[in-house]
Every structure is written in C-alpha cells, then in structure tokens.
Image (tube, rainbow, N blue to C red; front, side, top):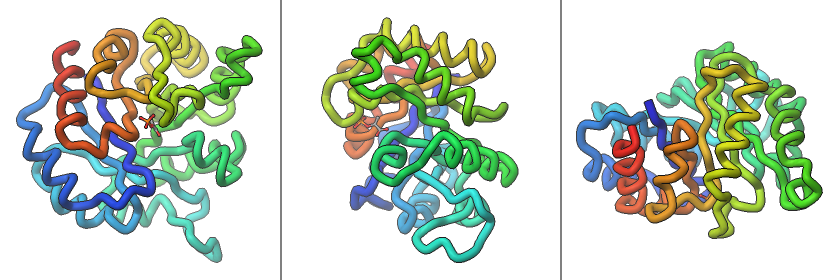
Length: 231
Ligand code: PEP
C-alpha cells in the first residue's frame, strides 16, 4: 500500500488544516500520515479521529525522560496519539546537529516504544556532484535502519527548492535502499513533490514525504489521489 506523508515542519498549522484534508479524502486505498508541530499534535489527532489518517511527530529524543530542554520522548509522542515519527530529516541533520549515531539512537528508541520511524536519508548537492550519492544513501541506511522503519529518500538539494529529483534518480536510490535495508522495505520519495509532478514517483517508490505541498489541503489531497491512481 502506498503512503503519503505530510511534514508540516515549523509552520503554524493545526486543526483547521487537518479538518480541511479530512474533508477532501474519503475512503482510500493508500495510507496517509500527517506530522504537525509538537504543540498541535493533540488537536490534529482530535480532528483526525475516525478518519484512518495517522499522526506522527517530526523528531524525538532517544532518552525516555530527563533534563533535555526542548526535546520530547517516544512515550510522549505515543501519549499524544502518534503512531509514527520522522527521524533524521536533513533539516535536523544540517541545522540541529543530528548525526548518523544520534539518528540510530532515535530510531531504536522509537521502535522500542512501538512507533514507526520514517527514517530520512539523502545526499547533499556536493555529494551528488562528486558521484557519492548512492554511497551516502547506503551509509545512512546502514547506520540507522532497523527492521520496522519506513525509509524516506530525500535528496537535500531537492527539499524546499522546487527542484525535484528525476523519477530515475529516485528509482536508483530506492533500489540502493532496498539492497541495504531489505527488499520489502517501504521507501518514500521526498523533495519538492507537488500535485503536478508526483505521479511518476509513485511508479518507482512506495509513496511520498511531502513538505510544502502538504500545507495546502487541495494540493495534498491531489497527491493522495495520484498515489491511489497508481496503486
Ligand atoms: C521535506 O521537508 O520533507 C520535504 C520533502 O519538503 P518539500 O516537499 O517542501 O521539498
């Protein structure tokens, strides 16, 4: 089954957007996941009740509790109704110092608690231009993947730039990920996916992790419909 996940990042969206998305999605043959900012998890969860749309956090700390100002644990995400959590997003790696080691610890903590991690991997522009894309993807997967993870291939140069990877590039990355993580691993593509360009990605991956376009209910619903059409 395809999965379309929305990463709302640090955008000021909560119940209203969740309600608008629910209103546009009827019975579905694809899985849908919404990841709002932490403070809105509860109200988004309420808006999603009975819809079958899953709720996820955007990050977590690997410890269960303690003096970690600003952080949340896997248990706290579970308590707010989450079933999934994004781990190792490139913005966390580049702006907040997440490393392969800390990403691996977060994945482990999420799995132990019963959350499904959406492990993000992807090469930078420099790595791509130097011919290291597949090697970087493989090393990130080998460092942090555990059975039970979904993997999102998100080339850093495609995130928020309006310049999506080609479907061929996404297919090659998905193949590298499945060689490293196992042939049944669910692999998503993320990076400037929108309602116009999404269809080819659903032919070569198991779904999409959507940032900017997930903030627009109509655009997000159109992406979900495209995923259904390719299922
Ligand atoms: C993301 O941040 O996960 C993402 C894919 O963003 P965008 O769709 O805006 O490129």
